[in-house]
Length: 420
Image (cartoon, rainbow, N blue to C red; front, side, top):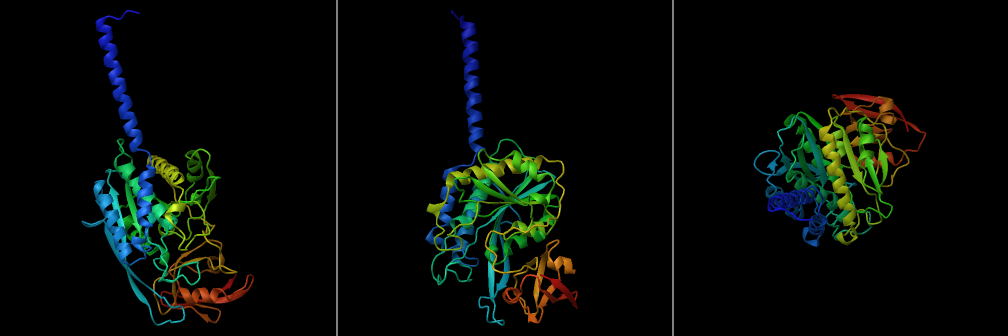
């Protein structure tokens, strides 16, 4: 067919425009997709021997924190508070369970950045970056492992890397989102959710309409069946369908209703903020020196990061996300005791009892009338001074037994009969 010069010029212009549109569409798609190479780079560095296991308060923790700050600065994000991305906090731990008098002060560093979209709602996306170091705090599951580097590639360099990648994706997204995003990298998680508690204390003051928190802890070992646990779906009635709607193709989701579990989302749930917790499952390397970067499923982690990106966008578009208290407790490790009291202990050092940070509905403590904020001092005749003696007392209780449990409430001693 013969083409006139005028028609040819129009067709060429349209073709060029088409190429231009296609180019920008591809560029946008690249920005909005998680980059596997970025995840690999972050995890490989964080789980390298150079960082010595990223123990809270260590030189390795400082190196990691500086790395995160540099990444956030490159993305043009702003600090959560002050002029630096670092949020300092302090706590104490007892490193000898047989010595009630000696505790060790710890100085930790959260690293927190904000993408301010001038929105009237805020979503927190977080992960803990600390791990066990050389097992100085005795949290390893491998006997006689003192002095061995616990690199923590899955726990939790995997979640940390995903948060860094999500910060890149959102900050470079050409479409402005309907929410502000706080990207929070916590330390002190392995000692009792210390860093996330610090942020949770102020998040509603700094950002009053904080509508949600997403926690990524151990998302680096997606198996061949593509099993992914998503916890917290009971913390708002909108979540079960939303989580399923955005499910990656071929994934098998195990949905857990509980807003409480052994990770940082718990700190926000206890402040009445709906949460989601993503977790690819425990494994034989959990809390051992063998949790290394060569065992990470990087392609699986990339899909999970994209999934969270979709979820966070969808949550930002919701008109309302009602908060609901949940009843079921999740755990990523095998229970060590025959019974559970159904509380979240405060791991901070104390000599006159153990603080109770949360009480789970329809569990022994709640059924007996024990409340959040109480200080536990005795289980039966067994004295509780802090978390170590609490665990010791609890290990002596059998299922079905009833024991008087003593707490202090507003300075007044109260005794409750608890059926375990």
